[in-house]
Structure formats: C-alpha cells, structure tokens
Amino acid sequence: MADDRLTSGDWVNAGLKALAKSGFTALKADTLSKVLGVSRGSFYWHFANVGAFHAAVLQHWREVAYDNVVREVEGTPESRLAALVERAFRADVRLERAMRSWATADARAKAMVEAVDTWRLKYIRGLLVETGLAANQASARARILYWAYLGHGLSTTRPDPAEWQRILDELVRLAATRKSG
Image (cartoon, rainbow, N blue to C red; front, side, top):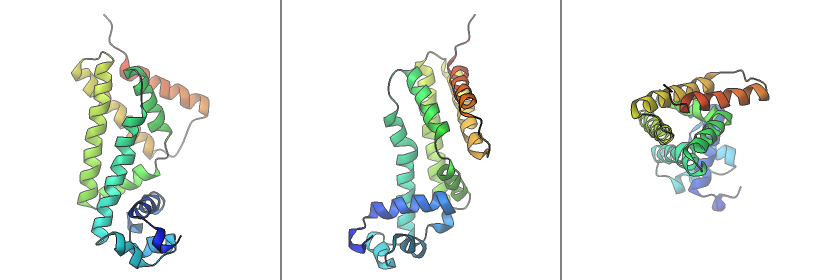
C-alpha cells in the first residue's frame, strides 16, 4: 500500500486486525508500519503519538462493537433480540477477547470496555422491557444473557450447526419469556 494513500482509518483498521490477531502489544507504529508496508512517518503523519492512535482504535472498536450492531438489528423487539443474539454469538470473538485483555493493562481500554458493557446491557434491557418484561426482570435477564455472551467468548468448543441454532433460539426464549400465572 502506498504511503500517500493511507488514511488514519486504514491505520485504525490495521490496528483492530493486529489487536484481534496478536493482542494489544501489536498496537505500535513499528509493528503496524511493517504490516502495511510503509514507513513509520506515515503513522506519525496521521497520529501525534501512539496514545492518540490508541484513542482512535478504542473509538473505532466502540463503533464496531456497539453503534454498528444497534443500527443493524431491526424489526420488532423480539426480532431485534433474536438478531442481536444471532449476530453476537456467531461473530468472531477474537477482537472482543483481545480488547478485554487490553483492558486489564490499560486504563483507557478498561474505561471503553466498561462503557460498551454498560451500553450493551442498557440496550438489551430496553429490548426486553419492550417485549413486555418488568424492568427489574429485564435487568436481571439482560445481565444473564450478556454473561452468557462473555462466557461463550472464552469457550474454545462449538457445537454442531443444528445444536448451535437450538442454543441460540433457547437463549432468546429464556430471555424474553414472561412469567405466566
């Protein structure tokens, strides 16, 4: 890639890929300039320092991990919940794991992960309230569903496709079913 054609977005996207593949220690000008086949000068043309680059990577992750997801799920509350579960549980979890690992070593990364967790939980809770659950029940179920998502990200095994679909369907059913009687 030619140096004069790179944008700050190209660097940020390369940073997210490097983060997912190699962890937060790969978020360095030297490492990324080699990956992109350009000089370090290109990095510093777009970012004042590595800290500014890290801030841009964190911001873009928030967009990828929350903003874009919320925009992409449409329909009734029930169909949005099902689409959200489907999308979240079928997504490549490497970036999520890498971001959470980074958050253990960097205060800004930790703050962003905590903010995204809060926004995700609020969004899920809102969907569950829209399905007819009481607010306190929706809060508990949102957290349980989110914990299932986080635990899934740590698992190295995956069920066969038919079982996987049954699991996702059951998660949505358990989360949204109102207590009768």
